[in-house]
Length: 185
Image 1 (cartoon, rainbow, N blue to C red):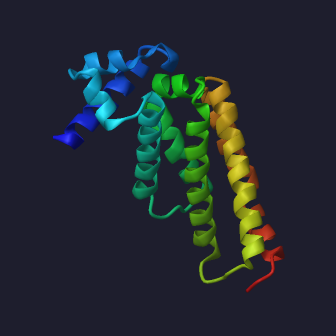
Image 2: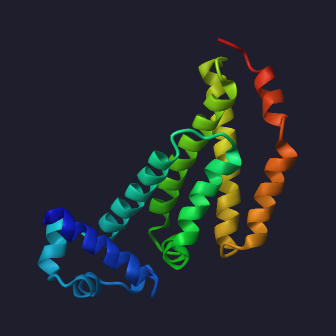
């Protein structure tokens, strides 16, 4: 029953985020929406930010589970964008809230997974010194984060998606050149 209640509470939060900004949602609104009392909410979560963090963490974990391997950087970033587009209004309300850092923290986590998994895919049997691997992963993650942040700032416009796709097209082969410059283990 406990997991059912937690799922209902998370579902209510998302439903309400589709209707209004996070700062306009109260514990009472969530409780009313899912048919529980406030004490039941507080039994499961200390406050709305704790609920929000659990939701974002679980969604980032789901993205990681769904993509055990990443063939292209564009594929990995599109997985993140797909999540955001499926809940566009809710995600925009989170992004434009005081809890934005929670969203960004887990976005960094997912992008770290995406970039490292992608690098492992293109490296194949080759390996790099740890310092070079960190440099490459951090650089790719930062580029992806920048594109996504710009996309979010522009209300998830299709034009920005095209910009990232075009970047990936223009950058084809460049990563291989950079990897060839790295020191091998």
